[in-house]
Length: 329
Image (cartoon, rainbow, N blue to C red; front, side, top):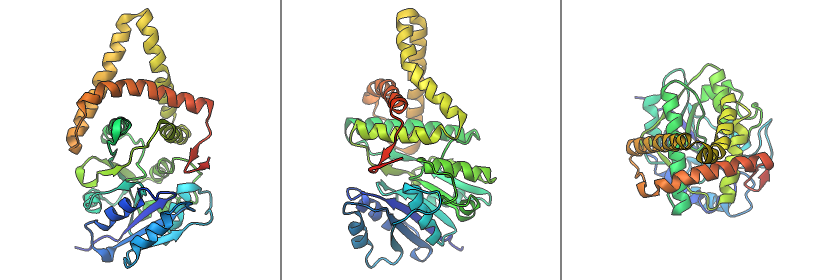
């Protein structure tokens, strides 16, 4: 059986801490080298990222390093890097991951059974490595969020794709005009996902170990707030229900506090409903993906979600500027 030609695209900016792990994981992929090309874009890094990449890919002809020095079309930041790598890629399918993410050896072959003629975009699960208390909170947060996205996808409701664990067909990508032609968004994966659906292609969200990627936890609340602000700013420009979701999240904690003093019955109803719902999703998807649930941390996670979600929404409302990789958008 003929193998599909695969192009892997990786955007890297100031990733000297993690890029080697990403490249080593890509080198371990179980896929014929003659049908695989890996394009890594160095986005004007000011650390040792470019040097690490160059050293690793020496004598590896299926790896290619591209130094990004200018913008193409409407694209900026990561979207600009991917736009330029896509121009060079020759694969039938583009697989996209991040420089701080590590994919399993089965990553490519795990996607293949889910391809069909009209499938434009497929996304898999990515979980945060549970490194320390904040890392475990992020791990559970991603598991809950992706569990909800997957559940909605199974019901036929498109929400988004994950830009660090995504397959898009060459046909679907260029049908949209590519990142250079799309209006700029700080959540470039979300924008591309919407554009692919608008062109009539279908989507899939896959929950299985073969395409489970792992990324690193952000080390502090400042960087975590910046990440979530970026997600929110990109999302609310596209779909009305993300705006509604933001309002509901922002209102939940004040409503819970108000109910405690005014109507104890409503307080316990809201508290128990959210707790049971979160617990059910986390247990279910931990089992499906073969990862531990961290039961002892669950009570702390519930408190964390109430407080942190309120913090990042307030942070966005009072300071909507986005800083990412030492750039402002």
